Length: 338
Ligand code: DTR
Image (cartoon, rainbow, N blue to C red):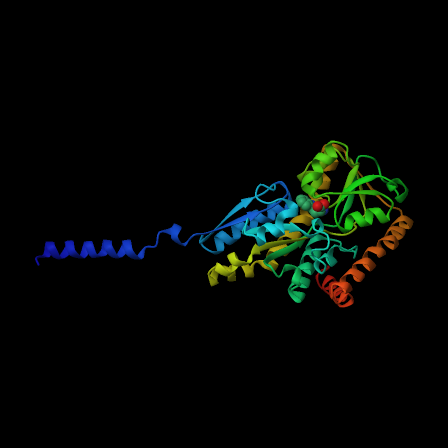
């Protein structure tokens, strides 16, 4: 073989080796569909986009996440079932929308005096991590977080408990029970159905975290906010178990390493965004903020105690160590509160 033939042979072998050993990138890319129920502007979807960006970056784009906000893949009440059945690989759910399905983790949604979403989100994550409740046994939990404490946003000024009497206000889960105990008329529905109910006047306002004043422009319809700092709403992001089991070890490690971090990031985002939303409501719609009198606050707290007692009764019936769980919630709350 002369020099020319030798170089041709080497070049052909090099080309062949490159073709065989360079795996086309799409062969390794893992696509995950991620369903969410509220509009893209709201915090459950903002945290979803952050998780997508971080997972793609930390897996060097081996994982591609396709996000579906606004109920375009699964609706609020179908989230858990849809993920278990594989209609979406990942889903973000709010426990309040499926009463009775999450007996243990809804403890975080009781009126326990959480002052911010970051603390409540980290406590929820710790409680899930410690108890690994069977309510999530059919899925893989990716992360958990909460809304900020709930306050009243209304079309009419609510300065006292008396002003609440018979007023139709939208809520869900424990918040609906609280409104009933305080004498209002709760109208339960997921957040995704709330904008229409507010715009059509079906409800006179809502009990939720205040960031929706901006994210869903509720400030335009509810120029009065009553700072009650009632309960928070717990959320979970879950993955289809078969999909999780199919993932490579390195990808699982990335996702697991982000679980608590995502809870803290979402809580912090929420707390900062509530402040921005209040400023937005004041500047754009001249929103007015009220606080209950000390007497009304004490009375409201007393009335809400029934919600905690009812949870304990239900928890014991579900073989949950209710007192121990509550003790742990308060201990974790003290750990994370500053
Ligand atoms: N407050 C609960 C949960 C919640 C708070 N902010 C948002 C935004 C988008 C969806 C849900 C929530 C609720 O009222 O549904």
